[in-house]
Image 1 (cartoon, helix red, strand yellow):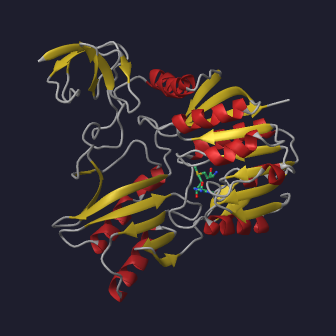
Image 2 (cartoon, rainbow, N blue to C red):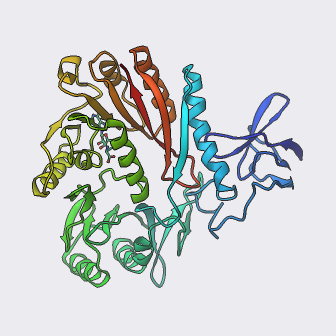
Image 3 (tube, rainbow, N blue to C red):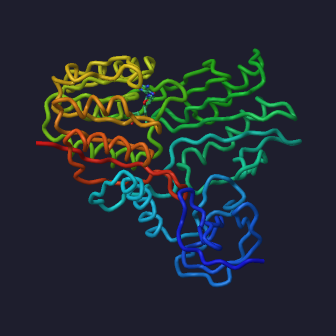
Length: 408
Ligand SMILES: C[S@@+](CC[C@H](N)C(=O)[O-])C[C@H]1O[C@@H](n2cnc3c(N)ncnc32)[C@H](O)[C@@H]1O
């Protein structure tokens, strides 16, 4: 047994101490704690807590540590909010940057509106679960403190679908999202569709008030439109397409982006998805939306056309990694919103830095690529005014942020 003092929390939520100058990672520990255990390959998997600290709290979920979903339920929440800000601060520091941080906004429990479960059949029925951390084992769960109550309320119907979708040996992935029409469900790796499965599935959908069902990618039924409300518009996203993880988080992101672009009359929304930002912003400004997935843009366009009172929205299918908007194409826009995937937007940011755009609302889900792209903007004459962290993934290490960049 070796004893160490946990000094900080790592990027994935493990406590970190040092032994003879080497960092040791100890899951489920808290900074300030003295722990002991066996160290294998710089990890102390089952640390024994010798001296707990007041930051340690009772995890609210009985599946914690077994289910792989959460890594930090044992730590006090204000500390976690600061930790996520520090992840962004550290990434910026590596690029030689610093800025002001606004108070973090964290989505509450029971607000996650999309989840992917693994489903398996049992002798008598079926269960839903999550994979345990780092293994292929599934932990059956009968509740999750993070998911939206509409998802929890759907467990019985979801299990009925799993039962039909699996043999005794197979397992399925079942993706679920809340929508205005009820749960939007996609079952993958399921048994091939036949008439009996189709009929039974339709009955289950109707009995439980679910909206739409995809089976191995094929739509079976859309009882009610699986719509999302984006500003004044209602959009039906294609199955499995990107959706901000919580409604609270989305509202905070949209409000912050609106604050940054202010009264700008013409805005480019880069990596627009189905219009999470485009459509609320179209209340006051003309928007050109750019996105590589044409089906998402078709949904955005349809939502815009059926909404009342919005300014012009133009949709453009475009791969912004390989074909970013050039300076001349950016000329009409006073502001840009940019919300790339984890890889960031190096190529597009280089053109923004060289363009006449003077306000950027940068939304990011990955601190390292955000900091890299921020460096490019600052080298191009922008100032990074502040960062607002928006935590939609409580008790995990994921973090979303909005940053304001301006130049005179
Ligand atoms: C983080 S999501 C943001 C979507 C949208 N802004 C929202 O909040 O719902 C990133 C989006 O970038 C799109 N995307 C990924 N790679 C892309 C590329 N190379 N060019 C353009 N869009 C891309 C994805 O399809 C996805 O819709």
